[in-house]
Length: 170
Image (cartoon, rainbow, N blue to C red):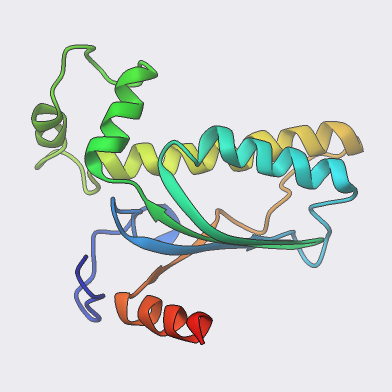
């Protein structure tokens, strides 16, 4: 894994955020609008993690998480291109069932600002947040957005991971 390169930016996705890239580590976080709660009882926490497992676990490995009544944090590593491709293929999310990994990677070259891997990875996170929001809105007879904005993400540099590992190992 390469260390973070400050100043050298990847192409941006919606909401002025860096795309989620295979094999990189990220701090994913968000909170309710204002200081509104996003979890009201134990079942909400369980359902949130169930949705996370359903949508995010196929495309990311989770190393840590913290769920608070009005916000959450995840430390994840996006899976490799090969693993993401296999997930997409096995779930019929590809334009052609016979497409190869190489052909899939070549599809977005020169066509879009963001590669198709990042788009599909982000879609999994979007489906997770939307699924939870819709269920909570139904449960609470509420309407509208639950979260402040689309999820926030910060790439975690290799040097930060090493420091965290050293601190935990002591």
